[in-house]
Image (cartoon, rainbow, N blue to C red; front, side, top):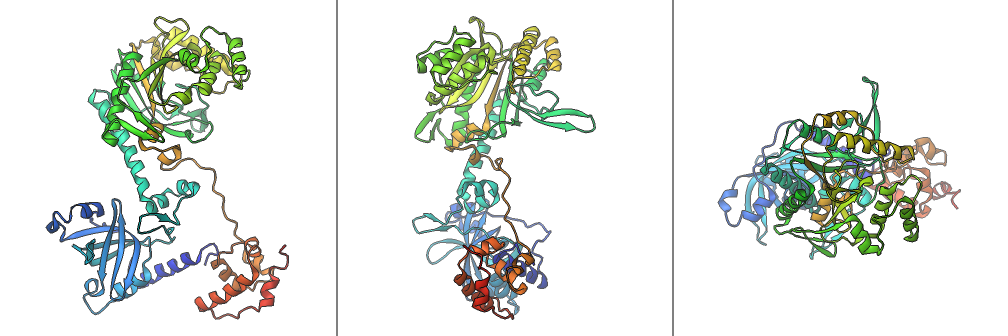
Amino acid sequence: MSIALSEQEILRRESLKQLRELGINPYPAEAFDVTAWAQDITENFEANPDTYQHVTLAGRIMTRRIMGSASFAELQDSTGRIQIYLKRDDICPDEDKTLYNTVFKKLLDIGDYIGVKGYVFLTQTGEISVHVQELFVLSKSLKPLPVVKRDEEGNIHDGFTDPEQRYRQRYVDLTVNPDFKQIFISRSKVISSMREYFNSQGWMEVETPILQPVHGGAAARPFATHHNTLDMPLFLRIANELYLKRLIVAGFDGVYEFGKMFRNEGMDRTHNPEFTSVEIYVAYKDYIWMMEMVEKCLEHVALAVHGIPVVQYGANEINFAGPYEKLSMYDSILKYTGTDVSAMDEDGLRKTCANLGIETNESMGKGKLVDEIFGAKVEANLIQPTYITDYPIEMTPLAKKHRSKEGLVERFELFVNGKEIANAYSELNDPIDQRERFEDQLLLAGRGDDEAMAMDDDFLRALEYGMPPTSGLGIGIDRLVMMMTNQSTIQEVLFFPQMRPEKKSKIATLDDFVNIGVPPEWVPVLNKMGFNTVEELKAANPNKVFNDLGGMRKKLKLNIDMPVKEAVMAWFKDKD
């Protein structure tokens, strides 16, 4: 018996053993053919009662009310909960009543998966329920679920609400807090509706490498690894842009990819080191055309998720129906700081940052300094969807030079509620200009900018074969889902966000307890009481521990001598 197990876990393992001794496999291999689901039954039974006279359901037991020869329980499946009614003589029609008297009443627990066959009826109180005629054990739960209670008004008490526990144990979170499933259902609708829109335009979904020899396509710090067989460094992709543009070179008119990106950077409420984005590239288009496409696409997404283009996000109503406001990068800074930075050199920008209270360092070039001003003074003001356009050339090594404004590129970012959710260019397709931009990035890397892009000679070779005029777009799916589901942290829209290593509880050995005077036979009892270390024991109230030992001896029917009170008090002699 492991001393790390709680009393509940020990009892459940004993029930598991008894099920097997009764010839019941707690984890059967056979398929269980489900024919009905909780939500469908509760929504449609009263209109079509004859349809539900032979149903088969499966799910977790979430509550039980045992009343002698009949019982009620709640079964939770993937769609919701439904009450089930079990009568001993119905599920045990023969003389052997073990399935009800022993298995259901004594050996099954909250959280166990069961299957039932029966018919749907209305109870005397008018509740839609399933009258069970056959019962099957499908999976024995060895850990107890958190007990989440709801009062008559629907208020939750003793909820599983700690964010770290919820994100780390999402399988528990979504079991006891099923309302959160709607976030992930909406997430799926966001992606599927975007895919539907792209496919309707004739663009093709593709896949590109995740492990890349050159980290390119964005300004970010990569995760590095090493391939043993090839004996070469590889990087988890920070973007898929350069591979998708190779496919435009290859002759595809429109390609897109939903995929995971990885950036070895900080974590906060809107950043996770592993995130999902979609990138799309369409030949013979420019960034002006792309603005119109984004407006149509995002309105389509909002309608798919909510039925209307207006989305509630915090205190703001966000309207995703176009057209969206447009501001150039320089004009937005002028609007919100009163300072025109369009003609400033690097020294002037550095002085402006100092005047605005923005910290800088020597690795920052002109583009980074402009970006710092924009991030500190402009972003938070952009609540409704707003395009920030025409960025300084130093900020965007992969975008085409502006057709009419010297020193700028044809780029926009879409900001919603103060956060960037989309980035698009008229793509640079001049291979000579592109090489010079990469060389400028190498100079920044030499100054210590660890987010500067690397030289990608194969991509340059592809451009030398010729790439048609192209517009490209990237949208951060996680942030878009946050907007569409009214969530303030990225962790809420990720099934399994990145977490710090879990702190493991220290577990003392039997000798550790014996060394302070605990008789060996009483150590497992202390463990069942929740004391897994000597420190935990010494932190407890000695009198309560003594009284609880007596209670446990009686409860577990232990045939061991009760330690005298003076001996128990001695276990705490070093306690402050």
